Length: 171
Image (tube, rainbow, N blue to C red):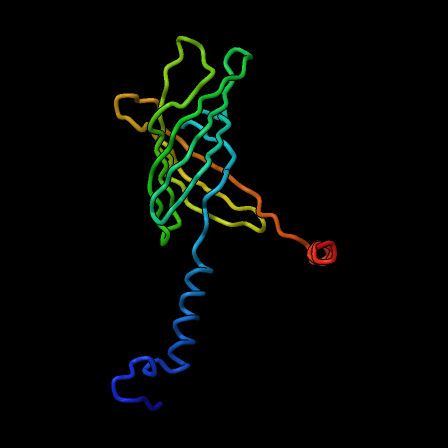
Protein backbone atom coordinates (compact mmCIF):
# COMPACT_ATOMS: atom_id res chain seq x y z
CA UNK A 1 0.00 0.00 0.00
CA UNK A 2 1.05 3.60 -0.45
CA UNK A 3 0.91 6.52 1.91
CA UNK A 4 1.75 10.17 2.09
CA UNK A 5 4.84 11.16 4.05
CA UNK A 6 3.77 11.74 7.67
CA UNK A 7 0.26 10.30 7.12
CA UNK A 8 0.14 7.54 9.74
CA UNK A 9 -3.54 6.84 9.16
CA UNK A 10 -2.83 5.12 5.86
CA UNK A 11 -0.32 2.77 7.55
CA UNK A 12 -3.25 0.59 8.56
CA UNK A 13 -4.31 -1.27 5.47
CA UNK A 14 -7.60 -3.12 5.22
CA UNK A 15 -6.01 -6.50 6.10
CA UNK A 16 -4.55 -4.98 9.30
CA UNK A 17 -7.94 -3.54 10.20
CA UNK A 18 -9.64 -6.88 9.52
CA UNK A 19 -7.14 -8.65 11.79
CA UNK A 20 -7.79 -6.29 14.72
CA UNK A 21 -11.59 -6.42 14.33
CA UNK A 22 -11.44 -10.24 14.11
CA UNK A 23 -9.19 -10.45 17.19
CA UNK A 24 -11.44 -8.20 19.30
CA UNK A 25 -14.59 -10.06 18.25
CA UNK A 26 -12.98 -13.43 18.98
CA UNK A 27 -11.84 -12.35 22.43
CA UNK A 28 -15.26 -10.92 23.21
CA UNK A 29 -17.02 -14.09 22.09
CA UNK A 30 -14.76 -16.26 24.25
CA UNK A 31 -15.19 -14.15 27.38
CA UNK A 32 -17.90 -15.49 29.69
CA UNK A 33 -20.29 -13.17 31.43
CA UNK A 34 -20.76 -14.88 34.79
CA UNK A 35 -22.67 -12.00 36.36
CA UNK A 36 -26.17 -12.93 37.41
CA UNK A 37 -28.01 -15.29 39.69
CA UNK A 38 -26.73 -18.84 40.28
CA UNK A 39 -28.80 -21.40 42.22
CA UNK A 40 -27.91 -24.78 43.63
CA UNK A 41 -26.44 -26.23 46.78
CA UNK A 42 -23.36 -27.06 48.77
CA UNK A 43 -22.52 -30.18 50.73
CA UNK A 44 -20.13 -30.72 53.60
CA UNK A 45 -17.46 -33.43 53.30
CA UNK A 46 -18.78 -36.77 54.64
CA UNK A 47 -22.36 -35.44 54.73
CA UNK A 48 -24.89 -36.28 52.02
CA UNK A 49 -27.26 -33.50 53.08
CA UNK A 50 -27.41 -30.54 50.68
CA UNK A 51 -27.84 -26.94 51.76
CA UNK A 52 -29.68 -24.67 49.30
CA UNK A 53 -27.45 -21.82 48.10
CA UNK A 54 -28.02 -18.78 45.85
CA UNK A 55 -25.16 -16.62 44.62
CA UNK A 56 -25.86 -13.28 42.92
CA UNK A 57 -22.66 -12.14 41.19
CA UNK A 58 -21.64 -8.80 39.70
CA UNK A 59 -18.32 -9.26 37.90
CA UNK A 60 -16.42 -6.28 36.53
CA UNK A 61 -13.08 -7.25 35.01
CA UNK A 62 -11.41 -9.43 37.63
CA UNK A 63 -13.38 -8.02 40.57
CA UNK A 64 -16.38 -9.83 42.08
CA UNK A 65 -19.09 -8.37 44.30
CA UNK A 66 -22.48 -9.73 45.21
CA UNK A 67 -24.77 -11.44 47.66
CA UNK A 68 -25.16 -15.01 48.85
CA UNK A 69 -28.28 -16.51 50.40
CA UNK A 70 -28.13 -19.79 52.29
CA UNK A 71 -31.42 -21.60 53.04
CA UNK A 72 -31.48 -24.39 55.61
CA UNK A 73 -33.85 -26.26 57.92
CA UNK A 74 -33.38 -26.89 61.66
CA UNK A 75 -35.91 -29.08 63.49
CA UNK A 76 -38.45 -28.67 60.69
CA UNK A 77 -38.23 -24.86 60.49
CA UNK A 78 -36.76 -23.09 57.44
CA UNK A 79 -34.14 -20.34 57.97
CA UNK A 80 -31.92 -18.15 55.79
CA UNK A 81 -28.79 -16.03 55.97
CA UNK A 82 -27.89 -13.32 53.43
CA UNK A 83 -24.24 -12.23 53.16
CA UNK A 84 -22.24 -9.66 51.22
CA UNK A 85 -19.69 -11.28 48.92
CA UNK A 86 -16.49 -10.09 47.27
CA UNK A 87 -13.72 -11.88 45.44
CA UNK A 88 -11.89 -12.37 42.18
CA UNK A 89 -12.49 -13.71 38.68
CA UNK A 90 -9.83 -15.39 36.51
CA UNK A 91 -11.17 -15.25 32.93
CA UNK A 92 -8.46 -17.55 31.55
CA UNK A 93 -9.31 -20.34 34.03
CA UNK A 94 -13.02 -19.36 34.10
CA UNK A 95 -12.79 -19.47 37.90
CA UNK A 96 -14.61 -17.32 40.46
CA UNK A 97 -13.53 -17.05 44.10
CA UNK A 98 -16.35 -15.60 46.21
CA UNK A 99 -15.82 -14.84 49.88
CA UNK A 100 -18.66 -14.03 52.27
CA UNK A 101 -17.50 -10.96 54.20
CA UNK A 102 -20.46 -9.80 56.28
CA UNK A 103 -24.03 -10.71 57.19
CA UNK A 104 -26.64 -8.43 55.61
CA UNK A 105 -29.67 -10.00 57.28
CA UNK A 106 -30.82 -13.34 58.59
CA UNK A 107 -33.66 -15.32 60.03
CA UNK A 108 -31.84 -17.71 62.38
CA UNK A 109 -32.22 -18.95 65.97
CA UNK A 110 -30.54 -16.85 68.70
CA UNK A 111 -28.01 -19.60 69.40
CA UNK A 112 -27.02 -19.95 65.72
CA UNK A 113 -23.35 -19.24 64.90
CA UNK A 114 -22.51 -17.58 61.57
CA UNK A 115 -20.04 -19.39 59.37
CA UNK A 116 -18.75 -17.33 56.45
CA UNK A 117 -17.55 -19.36 53.47
CA UNK A 118 -15.19 -18.99 50.53
CA UNK A 119 -16.32 -20.75 47.36
CA UNK A 120 -13.86 -21.49 44.53
CA UNK A 121 -15.96 -22.23 41.46
CA UNK A 122 -15.16 -23.03 37.82
CA UNK A 123 -17.51 -22.34 34.92
CA UNK A 124 -18.82 -25.15 32.68
CA UNK A 125 -21.52 -25.21 30.02
CA UNK A 126 -23.55 -28.35 29.30
CA UNK A 127 -26.13 -27.83 26.57
CA UNK A 128 -28.32 -24.89 27.58
CA UNK A 129 -27.30 -25.13 31.25
CA UNK A 130 -24.39 -23.17 32.68
CA UNK A 131 -22.73 -24.43 35.87
CA UNK A 132 -20.35 -23.17 38.51
CA UNK A 133 -18.80 -26.16 40.24
CA UNK A 134 -16.10 -26.37 42.89
CA UNK A 135 -15.31 -26.37 46.58
CA UNK A 136 -15.95 -24.30 49.69
CA UNK A 137 -14.15 -23.80 52.99
CA UNK A 138 -14.38 -21.54 56.03
CA UNK A 139 -13.67 -17.92 55.08
CA UNK A 140 -12.04 -17.38 58.50
CA UNK A 141 -9.66 -19.97 59.89
CA UNK A 142 -10.99 -19.48 63.44
CA UNK A 143 -14.54 -20.42 62.33
CA UNK A 144 -13.47 -23.97 61.45
CA UNK A 145 -16.94 -24.67 60.01
CA UNK A 146 -15.99 -27.33 57.54
CA UNK A 147 -15.39 -27.70 53.84
CA UNK A 148 -17.12 -29.37 50.94
CA UNK A 149 -18.39 -29.10 47.37
CA UNK A 150 -20.64 -26.59 45.61
CA UNK A 151 -22.74 -26.93 42.44
CA UNK A 152 -24.70 -23.97 41.08
CA UNK A 153 -26.45 -23.49 37.74
CA UNK A 154 -28.38 -21.06 35.66
CA UNK A 155 -30.43 -21.61 32.54
CA UNK A 156 -29.71 -19.80 29.31
CA UNK A 157 -32.90 -18.66 27.63
CA UNK A 158 -32.74 -18.56 23.84
CA UNK A 159 -35.60 -17.15 21.81
CA UNK A 160 -36.90 -19.43 19.10
CA UNK A 161 -36.85 -18.12 15.52
CA UNK A 162 -40.69 -17.97 15.52
CA UNK A 163 -40.58 -15.79 18.69
CA UNK A 164 -38.24 -13.34 16.98
CA UNK A 165 -40.53 -13.03 13.94
CA UNK A 166 -43.64 -12.41 16.05
CA UNK A 167 -41.74 -9.83 18.12
CA UNK A 168 -40.75 -7.94 14.96
CA UNK A 169 -44.32 -8.07 13.60
CA UNK A 170 -45.75 -6.68 16.85
CA UNK A 171 -43.32 -3.76 17.07
